[in-house]
Length: 386
Length: 113
Image 1: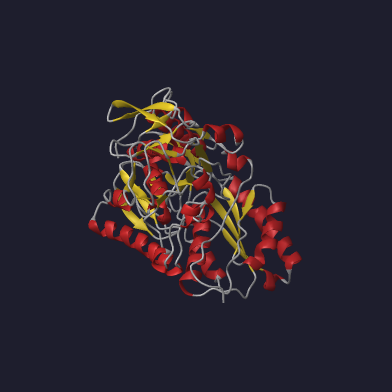
Image 2: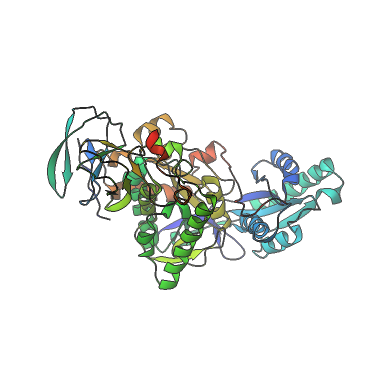
């Protein structure tokens, strides 16, 4: 059995990082959270634009993402900062995160009496939580406990030719060890959904996937637009991709060859082991944030054009198939699969490199995005602001 | 999807035996003659225009409205007839999916670029 060193949480789940998360329930608490984070070395904050003037499913999605970020096992403790009059229910956020058994403290700006007092109290509480976190023991855990997201962004023609198929090989290696793979990006299976559907374990799962794609395409119909120019993006088109179908067909190989166990909602906790599809936008930051909120430990992210994307709580491994990008953006790229294009490396060998990188990162090695402090976070909206 | 083996020294790759386009692994110039492999056999192709690295070239004539095939799957349809050795991209093919514009009389706007 292959093992990695992880942090065992109260609820039995394992983390590969041990973050103290400073979580604003609403945009109005962003500044206080950022100030607290700056004062407490090693903590991470997730400022965002939402939490108020939201209703219905849109409000529920924001709630779910915030709770999911707190529950992610890479997070060992959480400090929640609320304003006091927002639509997101901070008490409920606290209660749901606490169900994992990790320490959670909640402070409220209106209750504390303004920003300065809240920052002071927040720093004190965060320091206490940090002391507790430092005591978390590490243990050998099976790689079968790993949940890895697969994502592509800033794609070009190399993505479909080498980086995504090589990542698919690495995905198969993890799945063979009993691990879990999550693929998102509903937009980027359009035109290739029949190939993903063919891997579904049941007709029910096939139907769910079909509905996700149909719902998305209906939305494009309703808007009366051509997806091209938005997706594929201008950069994708410069990189040789001519249609969403071409992009999708190059995308789907990154999940490997295993059967599709189920389709889950955006930011929904992954219910079992094996290969899962998450209904999500193709937008890089929204998709990676949704994966983090679903409990993914790390994301393998292929990019031909080159993108620096990271996440506050989960490492993001950057994989390129474009030799020029590997050289020009060396400070952002972790793995180069371009030797495959030149016939000097096989897809299996390249996949093995990615798999080893997954194990190293799970064991604590920092990704380029972590070293550079890339901590992008955003919550996808599905409703209007009131 | 059939897995394509990459070989040293190739200038372009055909991902599937049913494909009617190849993807360039280097910049290619007008009148350049290159070799591609399809179904295990080597074929020669002459470029009728410059085509940049990473973009696609037609390896047969593709008629107007005919499907453009890469990875053995449909990636769009030709908006005009595409002779062999031509740059295949948004100026002469259109995606079929995600096209909310078509119901509103749109489409082909990329053809003017």
